Length: 164
Image 1 (cartoon, helix red, strand yellow):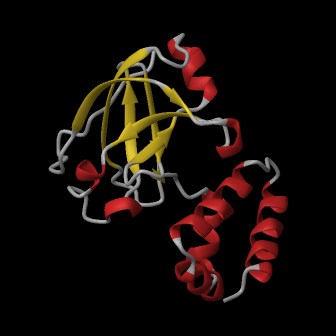
Image 2 (cartoon, one colour; image 1 turned 90 degrees about the vertical axis):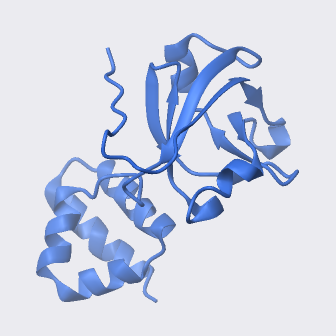
């Protein structure tokens, strides 16, 4: 059972909704989604660049970003694995809440990368220059690799390929 932890120290607004799950057309990716009205996004300091925590039916909790819906509003993607866990499909109504993710990256920095940042000034400097999206790309790349030596090699390769 997943324990949903809504931080008690959290002072930013938490928005709660009930809504039917949507699905984009195949030409737009076919993603399952939940719509977020533009006026809700105005409550967040970083507006559309805000990373969010989404909690669906008090069962699934995940970090997500906002995407343009095309009509001035936004949406968050709901992965198929979450739909399976919820036993839901397009058109089914869910209860969900969103709030700003206290971690602006929306993902923890792997230990290998954290150590490299602390020990290598060039790694630290270059990593800090990346956008949050680029940082997440590196982090997800590292998480896919189990071998620590290969993780280190991948960090340096990524940094070399993505010099600013």
